[in-house]
Length: 177
Image 1: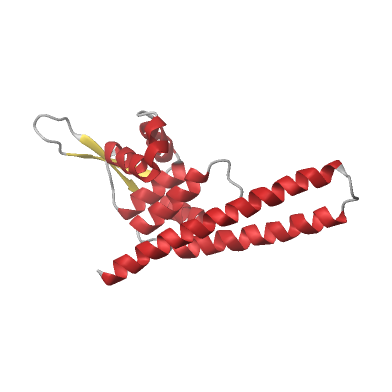
Image 2: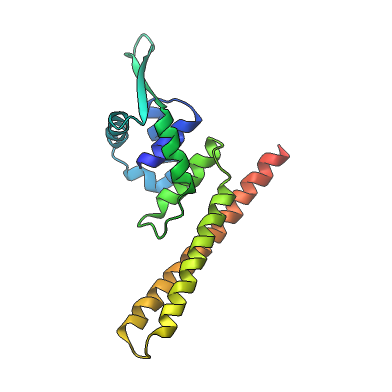
């Protein structure tokens, strides 16, 4: 969650409420379960870690002053590192989806290239697991586990194909505009 918030701030400084709305929009139905206070706790932690700064902005007459959060240079470095990370599998695919959304929104990276990097990593891991499965004696309990890992990686690769198709379509539409 912290990395996704930082990436969204890379586009422009923002209020906590606006960040929460963007996260919810990016996650669709998965974002509905987000605790409303979670974004503010996350922003406070990021500020304490020196990754964001907070400034007061003049509010409307009926609203008090609002806090506006912006990235520090350290926060920008962390966003860059997060976008280039190719770790997999993630316990929650929503994080990778947020990475794609935030990268595109802030024009920090090409989502299709991020998908390609993830695909290369999954294919590397798939080859390793398949070799390990072949090295196991027939009937070994480890073979069943390795088959499960292979199936998971194959499913993740199919999902990445869908991500690539969707983000390629977005790129094509934005070029035509």
